[in-house]
Length: 76
Image (cartoon, rainbow, N blue to C red):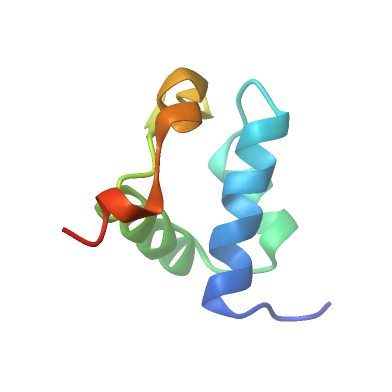
């Protein structure tokens, strides 16, 4: 199975969270073909840049906040 770059993994996490109501870490790790440690680092980096990811019986994306999220907010 192909290894993905960090940018590809982070985009994949966001994409998967936008099309699912919730998804578990084990499933995301398997889909991304990565380690648990790398997955949680990527997730932490997404949170650091303001992507509204949270956990409640699986990982979720706060879609209301996501609609209003802008990359320019990160550059401050």
